[in-house]
Image (cartoon, rainbow, N blue to C red; front, side):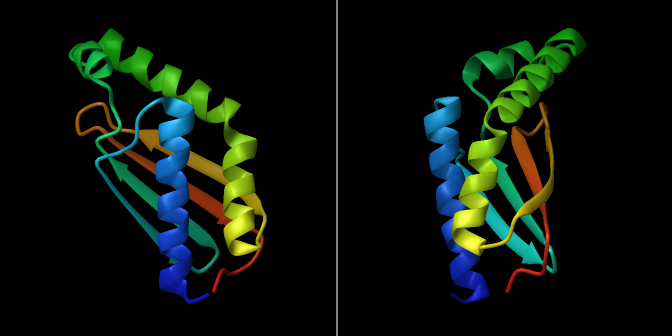
Length: 115
């Protein structure tokens, strides 16, 4: 597989994971493979209820905490998805979500370069 083909496959798989696990998918998604990292940007991931909650500081913290807990519960599935596509193991996973823009970033650090 070419780098572009891998990136496209990861993007499609993460969109599907968001739909299946979180209940809705992003409005935009993009994946970049950089050396031993897979960086996935998902836009438009917040539900309408989460957008309303995120209008104040307590709500923002609640949305971030809930999304973090959900990712931790789905972490093994995420790692399995990335392994199936890249044949590289995930060493670490970093993620954050912006309650202002509705964008989520995943960074998967791999055990080797992905090419």
